[in-house]
Length: 92
Image (cartoon, rainbow, N blue to C red; front, side, top):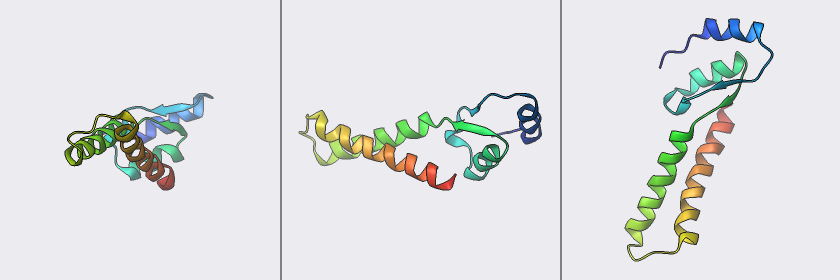
């Protein structure tokens, strides 16, 4: 991904609103960290969360082919997303 850090710094100097980094699922952690240093206050990683959720649910169904109770498979999906969020928070 191409992030214009210089432009981001210039924008931060002239606006007084929260800045958001959209589509950050494929952005390397060091780039995200740098954008935060330059004033980004929200980082969107929905694709990464969806991939974690879907992967965990698929794995659950592979182990539980007769499973049909969303209280179980939704839990593993949510737990996978929570782990992604924990990791993102910890590196920030």
